[in-house]
Length: 148
Image (cartoon, rainbow, N blue to C red; front, side, top):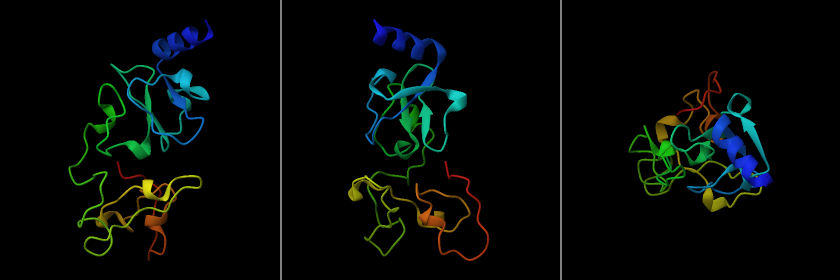
């Protein structure tokens, strides 16, 4: 009974999920699989995003935005993405040709599950890595606006 009330709340109110542990949110996942629910206006937009209309009650982490893996049943996490932002690091990404730059791993995260960023995103004044390491050791001032 409690689960069904939670699903109805997720569906009607349009809330997003706060993840209980580090895991990829899969299509069809609902808020009852997560630690708590948050109204969209209480959500930290640097970490979570509601999938929105057509996928009410679903959400995804900002790390999974534009990673070529569909997390929302309405494909919201993969809409409006640039072709060059891919799950696989390729030669056009930071680092030597064929050697990708990856953001530093977050504590408790598998180091191989780090995101790739474009070379032009390093020291551009916008934080793209979860730990902000793409804006470290840069000359000049930087802001903390994410590249989305």
